[in-house]
Image (cartoon, rainbow, N blue to C red; front, top):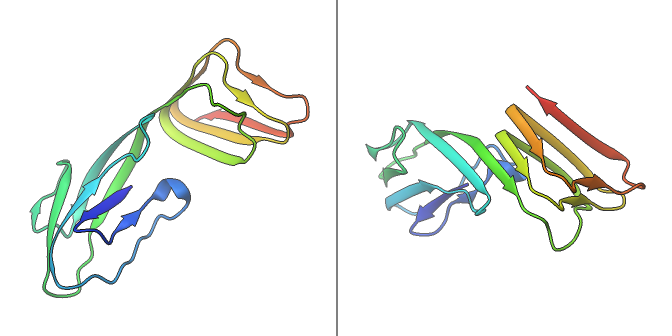
Length: 141
């Protein structure tokens, strides 16, 4: 997720939006890549558009004195799934380098979950899919 200081930009490719375009007033902004989720570890690389910092630093400074675009590459490094209070019952796709689910994780009736990992998917003992769940995919790319 990318957020700005002062407020105005708050976009997340993890919710399906990979392009974020916002009209902002003229001034100085600091963009920061944050996970927005304590279970999610991300890395970022600012590819272009930063006036200060950038690269693999946490922030990207931008002075809006003209139309500007900032490009960033976000990667989900690891997602640690903890036992939810309620079973997962909505469409969910989790894409990370590593995915770990601890004991007791559950997909409820009709739940749809897809795990996509670049290196490993690890599901602990107690992981289960209820009998009526109609969709469950694990893939390691």
